[in-house]
Length: 381
Image (tube, rainbow, N blue to C red; front, side, top):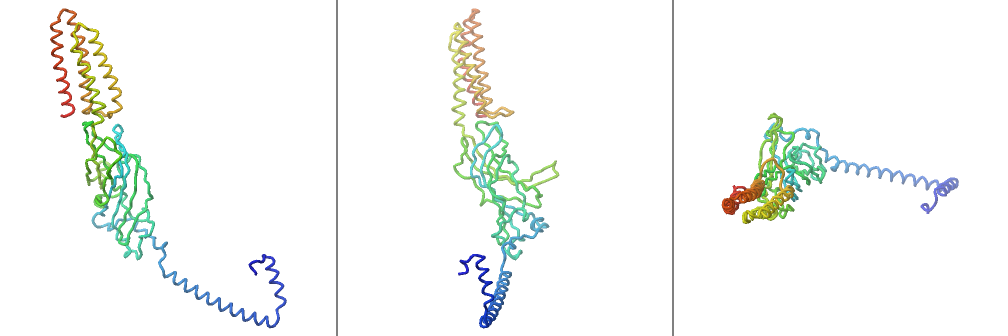
C-alpha cells in the first residue's frame, strides 16, 4: 500500500507510528534489526565475489589498447623489408577524358601486412573484435600517387586477426591522372595506371607486392568507346628530390584500346565525301569557270566548317596524331582542287584549251591516288 501513498502521507504515517510502540513491538523491532544486519552482511559477501569474478574476466575496453611503442616502428625494424601486399579491384571505369589527361573510376584498394607484435600470443589478448585505427598501430602509409580528385567512402579502420595479420580496405571514386599517348589517335591503346607508393619508407624498409587474390577488373564496365585488353603490374622505385629520396612504388594498370567505329563514321566518312566533292571539279569543262569555282569554294567552306566541329571530337595535344595528319592532307587536296580550277579556267581564257583539258584529265587520276597514299600513310604507317 506504501507505493500508492504520496510522499507527505508516507512521512506522516511513519511519524505517527513511532509513539505507539509497546514492549512486544520493541522486541519485534530488535529481531528485525538483527535480520537486516545479517542480510546486509550476505549482500556484502556476494558483492565482493561478483567484483572478484569481473576483475578476473577480460575487459574489452582494455583489450583493445595497443602499446604506444608499436605505432612508431615497423615489425622487425632491423630485419628485411616489411612485405606489404596491395590489391586493387576496379569496379568501374566511367570515362576517359582525352583533353584533360584524366579518367574517372571507382575501385577498392586493400593493403595487408603481418605484424607479429599484434598477435594474441604477443599481446596476451586478441584485437579481432576491436576498432583499430591507423593512428593506433604502425602502418606503411600507402597512398595513390596519380590521384586528382578522389573521394574515400570508408573510415580508416584496420582488421587485425589473432595471428597479427593486418588488413585495411578502402573504396575510392573520382578522377585519376593518366599520361595518355595520343600519337596513334584514334587507333590508340592507353594504359590507365593505379600507382601506389609507401610515402614514408625506403625500399629497404617496405616492399610493396601485388595481392593477386584481391586484384581484378570487373567485367561489363561503363566505359563507352573503349575495349579492355588486359592488365599489367610493375614494381619499381620512385625517385624524388633529385634522387635523394627513394620510395617503393607499385603500379597496377588497365590496358584499353579505343573503338574506332565512332570516328570512322563521324570523321573519316564525312571527310572522304568532302574530298571527293572537290574532286568533281576536274570533270567540269574549264570554259565553265563559274560552276568550277563555285563547287570548289563550296567544298572548301564545307571543310572549314567540318574542321571547326571536329575540334570537339579530337584531343588537343601539342603534336600531330594520325587523324590530324589525314585531315591536314585532305585540306591540302581540297585547296589544291580550288587552285587547279582557277588555273585551268585562266588557261582556257588565254587560248590554251588543250593544256587546260590535259591538266584536268591528269588531275582526275592523280587526285584520288594522292588521297589513297595520304590515307595509308596517315592511318597505317
